[in-house]
Image (cartoon, rainbow, N blue to C red; front, side, top):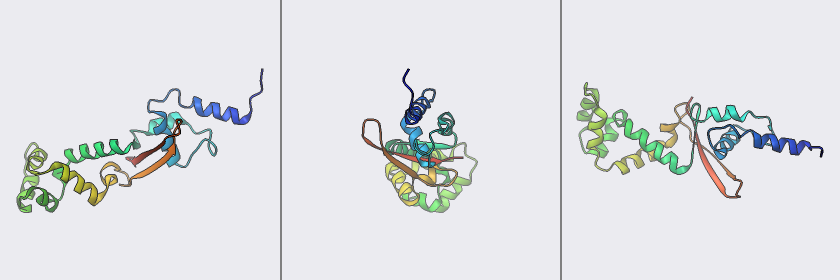
Length: 164
């Protein structure tokens, strides 16, 4: 039987850490790197715990996924936007918008969303003003990112948002 080197054992542990995770390997690596760990400085990082962080404490998205998630969030929270911002995108007086926001309608969100002239521009403008982190990172409103080379040697970037 061939003796294992320490480096070989570390690599084996690193590989084994991903066997029972529900999120994909790259997302776990991205979050681990964001939190300051890597296979050389902390080979004993508990990746099952790290996997549990994704979706509970952190969101880890590609650029496209982050764009989709922020759009969905904005669609659900149009009612919470400032009347002056909504006025720009609806052409409706901000006092009227305040009245709609303060009414006991079942869904002021639907009413306000229907009034927006160009929803794509609305989302783009909201993200431009506040950033995706403002909407997706409930904990600190920060958008972080990690870039690295994956197993195929392709550079990948993941955007990380802390939610709890």
